[in-house]
Length: 314
Image (tube, rainbow, N blue to C red; front, side, top):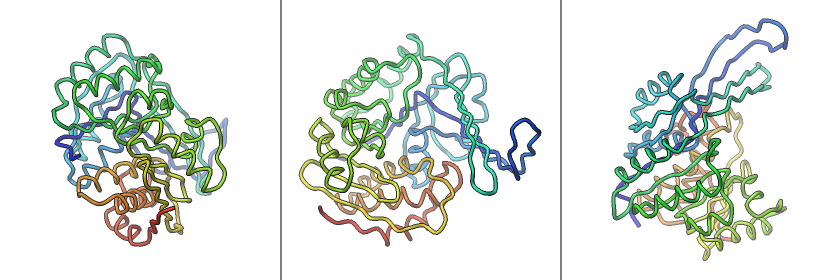
């Protein structure tokens, strides 16, 4: 299935603000030597990576209005097409304090609660944006307060009713709602995979069984990102393992899974076969660790890493 349009849906966007300090001592003044601001959130990160490869898409974002100006200015700078539904309150912020030895202290602000009126506006936007016969809607990120599992499933059901096909990457995923949603692709990381199956698989065979369980629940493609252990994929028929090269320096692992999902979507747009698509996804996820913050991986890094990814059937 080829997609005539791609939408990423972000109900819980976040501004990732990183402060670099020479030292961090609680209770005293700490001077910020450098600052990095990223307009982020899992779905938005997918949009940014797709846009960096000239893949047209629209980021549909529900955002608190009070502090969102800088956020959308940054997305505009990156030529990301957006459609915004504003809510009362502040857009969520993650504030990271990083010392020269790599120690990171994080302050996490909560997002505004979604209200019924906002959900109504969201459904209107989705019905207007989704085009038949095939619009891919990337539903990604942790859901905000006010979005229960039932409402999460209802939103995904509405997307399908409008003719959308779903790519799913959220902490709110369960085997039960995967069975109802039947997404085109699910991309859990290892912790999310453990939560889905209710256990911590040890070793490749147990991870393979866990991925198979997610596939049998109703996902057409399952792409499990395993950090430095690479990636494990299945479509219920074939299982591929992707081994990735060891990096000499890791600048940030935040957003690596989002880059991997974007890489899989890009490979699909390029009409790559499954094995090459898994290779491309693993290369994107690994290359993203070579840039600061949640910035998209550099093309040259993706190309270099892609030549070193080993994909084989298990």
